[in-house]
Amino acid sequence: MSENHYEDVCYMCHRNEENAGKMFHLPNGVCICDDCMKKTMDAMSKFGFGAMPELSHDELQEMFDRAPAYGMPMPDGASMSAPVKTEPALPDDPEKKKEEGTEKKGPFFGNGLPNISFLNMADIQGMMGGPKVKKRKPGEEKVPIIDIRDIPQPHKLKEMLDEYVVGQEHAKKVISVAVYNHYKRIAAECMKEEDFDERLQKVEIEKSNMLMIGPTGCGKTYLVKTLAKLLDVPLAIADATSLTEAGYIGDDIESVVSKLLAAADNDVDRAESGIIFIDEIDKIAKKKNTNSRDVSGESVQQGMLKLLEGADVEVPVGANSKNAMVPLTTINTRNILFICGGAFPDLDEIIKQRLRKQTSIGFNAELKDVLDKRKDILNEVTVEDVKKYGMIPEFVGRMPIIFAMQGLTEEMLVAILTEPKNAIIKQYQKLLSLDEVDLHFTKEALLEVAKKAMEKDTGARALRSIIEELMLDIMYEIPKDENIGRVTITEDYILGKGGPVIELRDK
Image 1 (cartoon, rainbow, N blue to C red):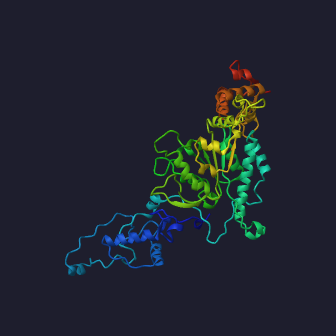
Image 2: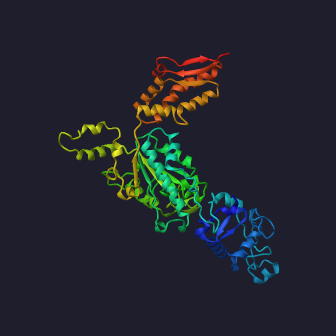
Image 3: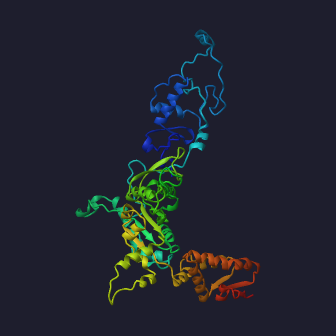
């Protein structure tokens, strides 16, 4: 992409051209805004360089264009980046000044530049330069990052997710419909009103952010990652635990949008149509029974309200926090889809408590201990349960879609080991195939691995740690013997009662 596709950012005040106005272009790609240039000229006048002449923007720009790329020229032709030469003290007698030719006749000499030593422009660029932001050409119409004809329909999107994510049928169905409607909404905004029926021309489609609830290791983050990869849209994954109220140590709320801008290669248009996934959202719930200032809880929820609703926010480019050395750009979050996920521990107890109050009395009444045995109790979650957990009503109100993900069963864990495209077993089979060795797991061995993972109670994450431990000795010993052609992992090996079955190659 050519240079004019990038925004110019002032290297002194770090404002972009949209906010600062017309820029002066100095050598080595350094840009200075009109305000900073005026302040510089005023400062030079105060330090004894004489009154600066009144030059127009174009005349001053032409003066800088005559400067070589390595720095500003001195009157004697030397580079401005060279050491400063001290001038002899001027005599007090004005007549002697004229005789000796040392009288200063103004700030400009034959080359049209002040007799001062500037910093090398390459040095300024190295010290103050930051990443540039891609911009749309003036007058160019906004085009959606996904064409409406290229948006996969919900059932096709779910089929694509099925290849990577095991189970979670309801969650995949909800997220497929929500994402499909979201990008149709963005495409509709770029279409002309005449393309719609007269009754629908003035109808504005609202954004539907999502709140995803599920136990740890059930695939919340993996589901969103897979979705963004299939759609080829910018995705930023942020952790809510590092967010704090503005002015306190930690990441500001705007740093979440800054990560999305970086994921979009600093293209504002792509970033404004991306997806932001905020994990561990339950960690910013209101703290209970505390008198101290809640800088990482309720105040963070309040600070996120404008982002979720849609607003113009100034975000740092190439950094997580705003400071004097980082340029800022403006991003509108109206078309950014926010997906929040969290484990919400003990939320099931809040749901059970609510359901027990509804339990009737009589022969057909549901026993209270039945609720304790239910594994899908999170499917009964309501807005009131989330509010009682500690999320403020304004935050929950901006999350119209709330759905729960299932806890993993042994059958689902066995399927996760073998069925997805990038299943853990398939990864090890590919690694050993590079040594021309075939790896096989028996059904009993897979079931035993799933049982061990259930005991760890960390979801699918436990599978990799168990497989890594089991395969350590095999991955160490197999390359030693080139005659090994097949390795079979049995239940006895998983239980520590025997070794794997090793078969040699046919010679």
